[in-house]
Image (cartoon, rainbow, N blue to C red; front, top):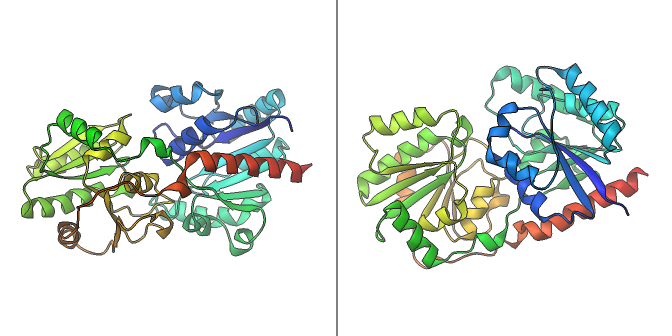
Length: 370
């Protein structure tokens, strides 16, 4: 079979779950079997390092924003597809609010059109919630294949009939396991760089500073924990629209010396090594890769109870109800057993094996479409 040409849509202008998913798979795919090209609708994305990363492997086309200019987007997509003749249109979605890309792909007569759910809820307000609930019912008018990163994400997007069909697939968010193996030497080196002593308990979080990730609650939890264990630090890795709000809260609580804001980093795999505990009290998630990464390096993890149990691959995860107070979360963290840290088996989320499976799925879909 000749190379399968896939057009990926759904990039934002920041590095998030979808961008990480695409980069991880892009690096591992057999380029003789499957090639990815990308549509970017955000000029700002060109300033982000993920954009340059994707350009190393494939073409990234900047088209008009389909949310603001749906007709221009559709015309440009039709023109692009006439030139490139894509086999698969793969739309990565955090909600079903915008179906223009699927409609445009249908108009292009692309054989395989995939709607891929990467989320299990949203905090975008009532209007967008209504729009999502309506639009998800008409996705099958445009798409003929359905992906989800978890069972929860699938249930939020697709009805039972779709989820039981042969056109529905769970596609694991996956990682390069070789990068996420616990090493004591890396831990010591990274702690030295950060100015953290060996006996300090480090609680960490990796994620975009947006409502979904619940950063202000993370600060509240750590504040309660720090009162009972002053020899502790909080590491926050990431950037986002709420960064300044969180920074202000840290300042108001006079915790500047105890909270380390690291911004966007390319050494996240090594930063996990410096941590003892990983905190993820998200309001919702599809399947958080950071939770897999944290377990892979042997961290004790505390997740909110809305996060899918599919991410639990070790004995190191404790789920805590979101309704519980910050002091209740802190108490559970205080009682955690942090001895005998070691890497765990995360083979289910091994990017090498999952990339092979994705190649096989694309191949199967192309055979069916003939």
